[in-house]
Image (tube, rainbow, N blue to C red; front, side, top):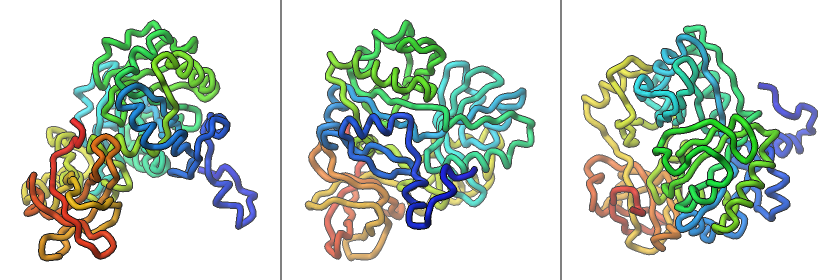
Length: 376
């Protein structure tokens, strides 16, 4: 894929390579603090992470997550391709159903985690992480020996996540689609905010409930403004990626690049529940052997007992100071008002209730292993 700018001077190149979403200028005008994230200029916060976090947990907020990638796979053998590259069993999908899965690599790691939408028996819609769009496209293309038509619509598509317990009420006036009866991990297509062919799914990354709304870039501004207007009586606010991270971490959801990556085992990451050995897929045999041999490490949740905030990359040690793992994600939970994290530890220290220690600036601070979600 050609870079969006090719005539930049060397000292300008990094800045100019950052992509904008369809609404980047609007976020800036709304006072958002913008940061580079996965190659995109994204709003990290508006009024503050804690305030935005609480808005979603107790009310409703809207995220612009248009940096995410979207592919369409179409053809008589589209399911065969999906089954080959996905860990989960997409044969169980039906029209209007969504499935979470990961893309295994050939060496025991993870290319990406993603969502699979079944549009119809010959059409699948894949949603991938922003930083992996080109990598995922190349990987899936490599295994497309089935003649499946592939289309990358990432640059044409905006995605808004309306999350929180008041999301259904906030959006009800914008569509004739019955959002109140939509089951978790299903979707519908229809008219939304006066725009045709909008895909609305009962999915999200916050654990607070809500919907994700896929719309063409040309209609993004209209839909965004309609969501804010319709949600105003319910206290809706725009929410940045900072609160998205604290919300997902309170639920124990993995973030690609932090908790899972090309080198981490999906089984050690707790993704055995979406690893289906009843079909053939990339490296199925390797993962099956690893499962049979027994895992060496496990991704666990933990709460800090001593005061301190765990961060990605910090070493986890045992009571004698011997390294037993590493922190992959950590934050001060706005809901619990205590520090929480995820990290890999050896199996002997993975049991719920186990005491572990986080090496924070050469101080070994006590924590205990707990089972996510941290916020029930």
